[in-house]
Amino acid sequence: MKQHHIESSIGNSKILVGESIDNLHEYLPKKKTAIITDTNLARIYGHKFPEGVPVLEIGTGEDVKTLQTVSELLDKLVELEFDRSSFILAIGGGIVCDIAGFVASIYMRGIEFGFVSTTLLSQVDASVGGKNGVNFQGFKNMVGVFGLPNFVICDMGMLSTLPQDDLQCGYAEIIKHGLIASPELFSFIENNLEKAINLDSKTIERFVYDSVLIKSEIVNKDARENGDRRKLNFGHTFGHAVEKVCKLPHGKAVAIGMVVACKLSIQRGLLSPAIAERLKELLLKMGLPVTINIDPEKAIAAMVHDKKRSGDVINFVLLRSIGDAVVQQISIDELKAIIYDMCLSTEQER
Ligand SMILES: NC(=O)c1ccc[n+]([C@@H]2O[C@H](COP(=O)([O-])OP(=O)(O)OC[C@H]3O[C@@H](n4cnc5c(N)ncnc54)[C@H](O)[C@@H]3O)[C@@H](O)[C@H]2O)c1
Ligand SMILES: [Zn+2]
Image (cartoon, rainbow, N blue to C red; front, top):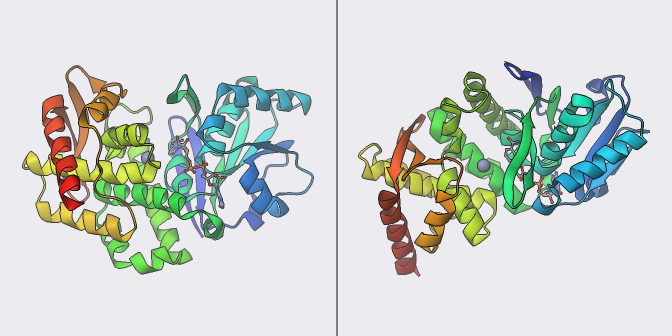
């Protein structure tokens, strides 16, 4: 087990990579506690939840990530007579943790909380950065707060029950972390693919730990997202558009977004085509897509509505080499050309 301590302007946290849910009692404070989880986790892991702690169960999927769910959970906390010294434990993926972190952060102006992160995505991404919140009026994560959990347990064993699509979402973010910040991690992924696919716990532990270090270093420098933190959006500007327009899972959309970002980087003379090829090869071996047939106009429209846009240009994270990302402004026309090109080559491959 490896621990990473975060001390930042928005609070302190510790991330326990490779810790087991069986040792949860060591981390729970001696406080009145409630568990927030979803129906899948309660069904599969309910027998491992600490005894005597009330379990507040929510449904699954983005549709439950609403203020309505928050309101229902707040009602239950009032019913349980929670006070300022009570504690909330989230056991679940990004959805459960985002909601539970938000509920804990607003109940009586904020009570302490902790996470057991049960998806690869939540371990490598949602566990760090302190963003908690819900969707609003169709916009993702529109309402929320910054606040850190006291601890995050990342139990590799729990990943064995995670559906393949959800594992792939995590892999896409891990590859992203390697690309923007660590040639070592990127090579380690390339060289240990087989082990990763077989969920070798030491290999996944390294993926998660390195990702946690990379994300927390970036976030620490820029907790409120004005500068360096934008690099974490690598693959996400186009990725979000693909996710929205094509209804693809987040990780698959990010994979395509990273390929587009590499194409733009090559076009601008920043990146060698050989690196883009390495990325494509890795994504394909992980079962992630590298092309898509999307209506370029719809994709652009979706991106123009994205919050990272200012004026007729879009802030795009590009790559100079593995581990060296840079934010540049891309004109809509430049972007259109790349997307048309991608759709054309997808057509030709069919
Ligand atoms: N706060 C952040 O910084 C941050 C970062 C990235 C993503 N997110 C958010 O996270 C959400 C996505 O999170 P996610 O991908 O973890 O999805 P999720 O929480 O919906 O979990 C995916 C599915 O897997 C199931 N599941 C979870 N763990 C399992 C396990 N161990 N075994 C079997 N099934 C399991 C869940 O019940 C769910 O059906 C999005 O809403 C996104 O906005 C937040
Ligand atoms: Zn993402």
